[in-house]
Structure formats: C-alpha cells, structure tokens
Length: 284
Ligand SMILES: Cc1cc2nc3c(=O)[nH]c(=O)nc-3n(C[C@H](O)[C@H](O)[C@H](O)COP(=O)(O)OP(=O)(O)OC[C@H]3O[C@@H](n4cnc5c(N)ncnc54)[C@H](O)[C@@H]3O)c2cc1C
Ligand code: FES
Image 1 (cartoon, protein in one colour):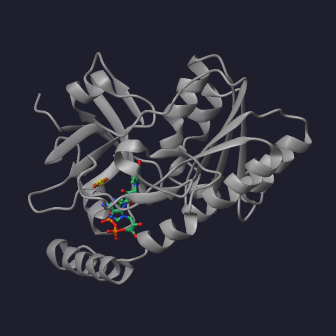
Image 2: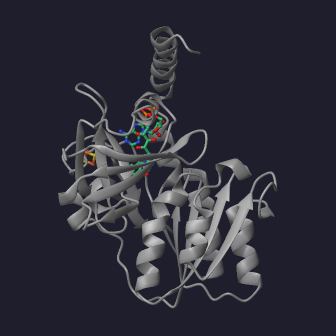
C-alpha cells in the first residue's frame, strides 16, 4: 500500500467529505488537537486540516474537509484509490488533557469534526463530557450520532430551528448553565465570531474557555510567521504553540482581519477553478 492513498471517502453533506488515508507514521504518533498539512498536487497550496481520528493497527488517519475554496474543492473531488501528494504531520501542540470534572466541547459547522478527538480524549481521562453542536441548518450538522455515542450529553442548536434547539451554541450553553450543569472548561472550534462570543459567555459564566485558532498557515513549523495571533497581549505562533489557546484574552478581531486579507484573490481563484472544471468534464 502506498502512503497518502485514500482508502475511504464518504460525503457527510453537500460540502463536507471524510477521508481515511493510509499514513502509518502519523497514525502512530497523532494526539488530540493536532493537525496535518495536505497538498493535492505539485505546485498546490499547503492546507492545514485537523486529525479527526487515527488507527495505529491499520496505519490510517481520518480527516474531514469542508470545500470552501479552490484547494479544498480540489481535495474533495479526489476519489478512493487516488493519493494526496503530501501529508505532513502531526503538527501543533496537543491539547492538554486532564480531569476537570465536567468539560464542554463546542463545535460549529466543520468544527464539530475537529472537536471530536478532543471530546474522546477528555472522556478517556474520566471527565463528564457535554457536546454542544451548532450549525446553520440540519443538513450542515455533522457527526451527531458519533458525538452522542461518545459524550454524556449532546445538545444541538441550529440557527433556523430545523434540528435541536433554535438558536446558537451560546444559547445552548446558557441553558445548560441555567439547568445547573457545573462546567469547568470549554473547548471551542468553529467560525471565529462563534469562538469569540462563546469564549466571552463562558468567561462570564465562570467556565474556562479555550479556542482552536485557524489563522492562515504556510509551513506549519514556526518558521514563516504567517500564523501569528495575539493572546494575552503577546504574539504567539498558532502552528507550533497552538492551535488551541486559552481564549479569554485572544484578539479575535485581529484574527478576523488577518484571515480576510486575501478574500478577493481566494474568490477569483475559486471562480476560475469552477469555470475550468465545467470546461474539462462537460457535465455541469
Ligand atoms: C489548524 C487548522 C486546522 C484546520 N482543520 C480543518 C479541518 O479539519 N477541516 C476543514 O475543512 N478545514 C480546516 N481548517 C481550515 C482549512 O485549512 C481552510 O479551509 C483551507 O485552508 C481553505 O483553503 P482553500 O484554498 O480551499 O480556500 P481559500 O479560498 O484559499 O480560503 C478560504 C478561507 O480559508 C482560510 N485559509 C486559506 N488558506 C489557508 C491556509 N493556508 N491555512 C489556514 N487557513 C487558510 C482563510 O480564512 C480563507 O479566507 C483548519 C485550519 C487550521 C489553521
Ligand atoms: S505557519 Fe509558518 S510560522 Fe506558523
């Protein structure tokens, strides 16, 4: 079996795909909270994605990718039996796993996949784990069954009320608090505004918040400085010191500004890719 081969591909919804990839060395050393950098082809972008699962016996790793731009759309068009050009990792600092008593894991959109291994690690460490899963609508809410099988309690919230409670993850956390859940720490992964407002609420409720930051990354090994974020007034490199940081003092507004810097170029590239794709396959 050649390394980087896609052994399994499953669509979780119209934009999100799960890949099981043959990569024994990464499977052997992966830990919750770490990620890999993928490249699809020579000259292609380096794309960080979270290690969602790994199997040391089979030598496989699992990643879950949401197509939002050119590179992720190209990845999600790869088929079983095809290969990623590079799979580098595991990268980043694993999440510090300890017994807090009760822990909330909060996932928004594809962030649900990213928070899954963290939920599992906290469960294995003896915590009561409450999953709070959020999405715009039912179709976009992934891995509910898997989370429910793992966690002591799972609460879903959708913006349009099509599944679970109507509202945002912050509404669900407030409700859990009002019902008397004594949550000590919360681990949040999702869109930046969601992490910002969830951290603020948790801080107000006496829950220690942590967020996994997603600045633009290049090398992923602390050399280029691309992924710098401000935490407690200090510059930190998310690829090596994170991506998970205590989030009471993260400068989320700076992170939003920096991740939006290349929006026009990203939009143009995606449009060119979609146009090119139509021409090549002639099916759309
Ligand atoms: C540590 C980490 C873990 C991640 N885990 C996952 C995951 O498990 N599943 C998943 O679907 N996505 C994950 N992401 C986000 C993923 O890396 C971006 O969606 C992807 O890079 C977008 O590339 P694109 O060319 O398709 O889109 P583009 O059109 O190039 O970009 C769309 C948006 O994605 C972000 N982005 C672009 N390039 C990068 C880059 N090199 N590094 C980081 N962000 C970038 C920017 O916010 C940008 O506005 C993770 C990001 C980080 C930093
Ligand atoms: S991605 Fe280059 S220093 Fe972090």
